[in-house]
Length: 442
Image (tube, rainbow, N blue to C red):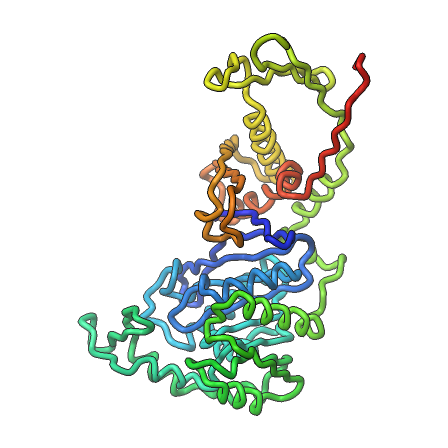
C-alpha cells in the first residue's frame, strides 16, 4: 500500500492513498482513496465507465476535486480491470454492482459511512442499482449514464467467438480488445433500472452533456423521468462523454459537492468516523490527541565551527549536540550528515516513533522498524499526477519495513498512522519562516 501527498495548484492539499479491498468474488480490488486536508465533510464512492479504470479522466478529476471540496472519495477498478485481480470475462453487470457495494461497505468499516455514490457512464447505472443495497447512501449522482444497461450492447457489435471457450466472445471497445462472457449479455438484459429509480430512497442528481455522442442526452431524460423526487438535472453544456476538458470536470465536481451538501449529513465531532484521515480506531484518536498536545520544545542553536574553511557546524539542543557538514564533493570535510540528511532522519524517526506509540496503545508486540527516507527533485513535466508541468518539484520517498509477522490489517493500520507523525505534517503543511538579525553578542 503506497501513499503520496500532493499539493494542488490552487493551494488546497489532498492525500492520495493506494489501498485494496476484497471484491464480491473474493478478488483483491485496487483502489485509490482521495482524502481532504482536514476532517471529511462526507464519504463517497465513485464508479468508472464500462471497460475503463479508476484512472479515467472523469473518474480521477471528479474524485480529486470532490476531495478538495472536503469529501473522502474512494475510486476503484472493477474485477478484472486496471490493477484489480480477477477475470473480466467472468464478470457481469450484477457482479459490478456487488463490487460497488463491497467498496462502500469497506469504506464504511475503515473510514466513514458512505452517503454519496457517484457513477460515470456505465458506472452510473451501477450506482443506481447499488444504492438500494447500501443503507447509508443518501444521494446518488450519475454522470453521462445510460438509462438502461442494455445500452452498452451497441458497443459489443462485431463480437466474435473467442478461442477461450464457447461461452466467451472477443470484442473491440475503443480500439482495445476485450473478452466478455455470454453471461454478461444475458445479465444486462435482465436489469430493471426504471423500477430501481422509482423505488430509490435517495436524492438523485443527473449530469449529462447535450453534446454527448456516446450516451445521448435522451438517456438522461429517461433516468430523470423514472426517478422520484428529490431529483435534479444539470446540463454539462459543451462537454464530451469523458469530460476530457479539465474545466468540465471541475464544474461537475463543484455541482456535485454543493448539491450533495444538502443531502449528505456532515459527521459531527462526536462521531467515531469523524477523525480526519484516520481509521475509526480509539488508539489512532489517542495518538492523534497526544501528538497534537505535545509541549513546545526548545529550539536548536547552530554554530559555525570554523569560519575560515569548510562548512561544518555544531547544533545544540538542550544537553544534546551534533555535527552537520557538507560532503567532500561539495567542499566540506564530511564530519557529519548534511542538512537534508538531518531533516530526513527527523522524518524517519518521527514516523517510527508514532507507529510505536500507536502499537503500544493497541497492545501489539512486534520487532524493530526500519524507515528509509530519500529526497530528490523531479521535473514537473515527468509527474503524471501533477497539475503543473513547469519547473521542478521536491519529492520525498519513504519506505517502512515492519515485522513480517504482523497481520495485513495491522500493517495497514500502522501505515495509516505513520502520516500522523508531526514532522510529516510539518513538511506537508504550510510553513512560514521569519528571519531577523540577532544581537551581535548572541
